[in-house]
Length: 113
Length: 154
Image (tube, each protein chain N blue to C red):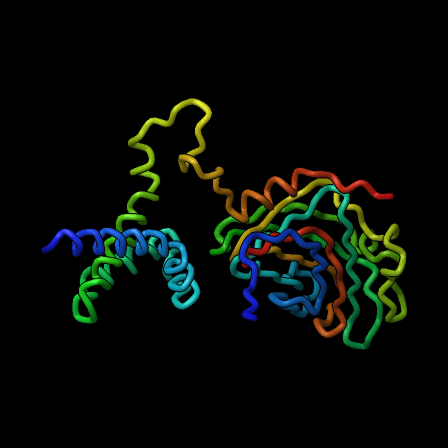
């Protein structure tokens, strides 16, 4: 494998990791019976395992999705101690679920005019 | 020029009523606490009802005649309906907002029931309203309105 090919694989893997959320959304919408937290891992694994049949780069992109999904697992995030004040996802703002937002809103009081 | 749909989370007002998507209406059974309204929160949606939000409910028999006696309760349930928590219980009259003769009295918002405390539900979870009374409420006659706020992920 030449150097340029390695870089191409690395770039495609990065694209796969970046597309993780989009792929998760697609899987969750198409197959609602699959829990959202596993959608990325399942899709990534299938692309990694069988993507070669379509194209080598599909398999590489699948590896990226898989790596991105594994990195988001709570058990993996728990391995690394976070510095004080850091958000759980590093430089990204703290992720909130819709449920978190609704719970916070439900604690507010509506003031009638 | 291509137009793309903006993605993100939106907070919008919630006005649940008998015609809202996800609502199922059911007849009650005489003298048995019966589910009359079921609401399952849609995918990628979470709802919040806050203290001070308003609620009104108007039940009629199939005759139709107003139902003015009986007990209304509101429950929160998880997606599997394995656990339930009661968040409201009062005589039906407390929620009628002056409704009578087929007219659902929601013109005056101040007459509607004031929710005493807040709660929230997220995707697939349930909000259930039950009625227990001698009269049988007809699902086709059931009218209600529940205010709140909702979060949608697009």
